[in-house]
Length: 263
Image (tube, rainbow, N blue to C red):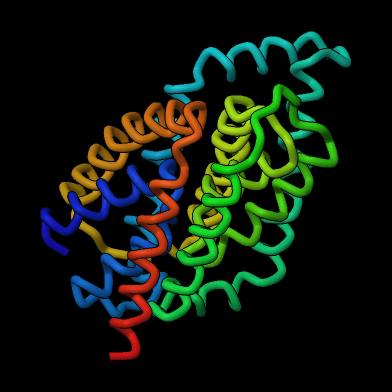
C-alpha cells in the first residue's frame, strides 16, 4: 500500500461512514480499482485504524451529548439519559447477534463482489428516496423503534447497504423526528465500533498484519478530518430533507458497479 492509497482509503472511510452511501461498499469498490484482491484479514490493521478515526470524530461531534448521557447514568436513576442508553443497547442487539453468529459468512461478502455491492447500493437508494418523501414529525425514538433501527443496522453489515442511510431512513419511516434520527444513528454505532475494535485487538490477528506506521497515520488523519466534515454535513442534510441526492448517487454508482461486473 502506498501513501496515496492510504490517503484515499482514509477519505473514503471518513466520508462514507456518515454520508448515506455505504462505507463498506465504497471501500470494496476502491480496493477493486487499486487491484487489491487480498483476504479481509490482511488489511485488518488499517481497517481498525480507520474505524477508530471515525469513532473519534463521532465522539468529538457529539461530545456534549455523550457527556450528558454519562453524567445522567452516574446518577443511577431512571432518567432520560438512562432510558436513551437503554435504547442504544437495544439497538445494538441485532448487529451484535449477527456479527457473533455469522462472522465467517459475513467475511465472504468482502471479497470484491461488486455485483452484490451494486445491488445493495440500489437498495440503499430506494430507502433514501422513500425517507426523503416521508412526512416530518417530532416523535422521539421508542424502545420498539430502537430494535427495528437495530435490525436495519444489522442488515447494513452487507457491503453496499449504508449503515447511516439504513438507520436514518428506517427511523424517519417509523415517524421519528429527523434530527433525533440522525443523532441516534450516529451515537448507536460508537459502542459497536469500539466493541469490534476490542475484539480484533484481543483476537491477536493484528499481530500478523504488517502495515507501515506512516501509512496508518495518514489513513487515520484523513478518516478523522473527513469524518468531522461529513458528520456535521449529514446532520444538516437530514434536517433539510435532502437525502434524495444521495439516493440518485447510490443508484448511479450501483448501476455502474453491476455493469462493470457483468461487462
